[in-house]
Image (cartoon, rainbow, N blue to C red):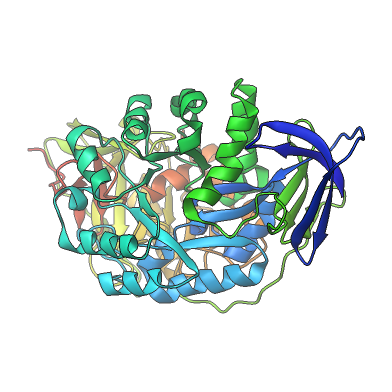
Length: 533
């Protein structure tokens, strides 16, 4: 084929004829022709949980290639928390059959903390055995950063194995700075995708970490961090972390590339972050448009609209026919779900003079501890709603507290996607709606649900209560319908209410969260009572 080659590392653009044989680039010859199409290495999401798309890997791939994504660096700890190694192997095998380049890691924080109930535990020996595999590329995000700082032997042993096997080590340390950060890095942690402040990201970069600039469905850190690109691009990458199906239908890493270039960042620097840095840092099985490389590249127009995507020399997407050429794969359902249907009494909450209220923030994973007196519970006028986390692995009483920020005026929403242990989580305005939404998820052993008290909307997630094996466009359409229902009928003010809901149980993100065992202080890593007094 002929096109203008965007030579990112040499900062040149010139017309070439490229010869491909058996999926390998055999020759790249400069030519003297005027061309209006461009080729460059494919885009890579440097940190994403495929499960957050609510799609199995093979369905995720069909949407991603339309945006020029040829590979991902994927932490499977969502399904690992539900099904352990069986879940990780499901992701690897389904990904391999797809024709897309997934690169999975070994998840060291399963469970993320001992303060919640998960479906599995990955021991240091499990992590060691996973890291020995050629199809495991790195140690996934070390979420228990307090454990690293305080010399937790379990965490340090897992990190030690990654070092011994020369596998990269991913971090997860929101807001961590100063001496604590220095110790975290000295343990061997190399990256962080959780930076939400400019000063925080800059300190991490200056201390030798690589920073992944994240723009997902819930956490959006581009605006805060993009001023760092021009100076630190060699140590930065782009990532999504978590991206819901309706967002993946619209865009992926290509949107970050366009946005950064529009913000007047040097296009070669931006493209190095999107295409080159992940391959070199994680030693990915992805070609970089050089002779002898696997033919993994994309064809774009001058505005970086994706025209074609190639993986191993095969055109897997062609915009001219709007078609995707990846494999269809039959899969059997796997799950781990033992909770029984609940009653209204299961969601009772203690009467307090002042409550600890979880304050959810739009586009952020962090929360605030909002202490307030309430005359009634729930208090819709003050946006103080009931939140409950239901243990899906044991049939026990749920943990219940209060939350604000969702803005619901009626009804309830529930989901079996609740990071990272993926118990069932529900937020609602009244006990009838809460019971209806939660029991719909329990009855189907996974899914997302919304009800206004009368009408019920539901999306089944038959794979581990996290993903659907159905066509990605259909899942995205159904999700969009439920999302719209929550915003318009229930009046939620959040940009991505289900994504925000899924992080209300993520204990490793400050300031206050709820696990199936109770209300949790993410700063002190300890439980707190819902009553202040």
